[in-house]
Image 1: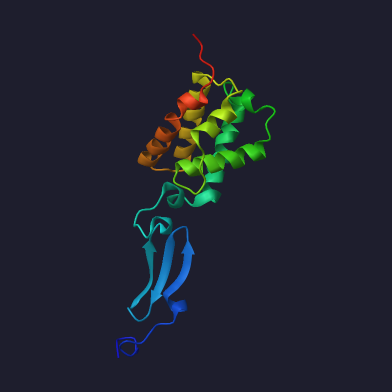
Image 2 (image 1 turned 120 degrees about the horizontal axis):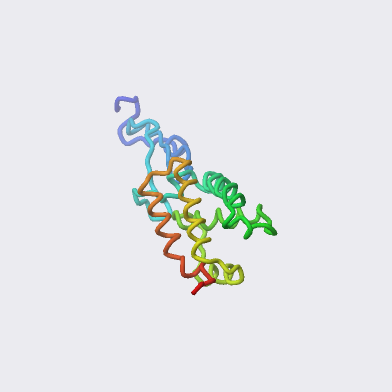
Length: 171
């Protein structure tokens, strides 16, 4: 018998092995191995890799939605980009933007460059408006205590799509 009173080679019931899978974190209770409730961090979509996406790191859709809502509170008050949202269903906009930002953070949603170009094509977005959006999103991520390197990664993803989103080029 081992230190826990189990016979050598005895099997621990499965329910004692895996207790919860939430956002790639598995809490296990290995009574046979004597490692109770040790968190194992893994991104199960990547075959058990030990790295986590930013999406998982910051709490998934619920957390990203809060960030996006706070961003839009600033955006609609902005003299520069506020007018873009005058006749927009903001509930739907927050939902779409939550999925988009989640995709940039490694979440399950994805958007093609073609889809982004199509949705922005008639909006006549200029560089000043794009830069205002980037600034407000950056501020919002800071307010939600995102780490500097993570903000830089998200901003890189946003800025890499500038030529797709900017549809009005003033000479």
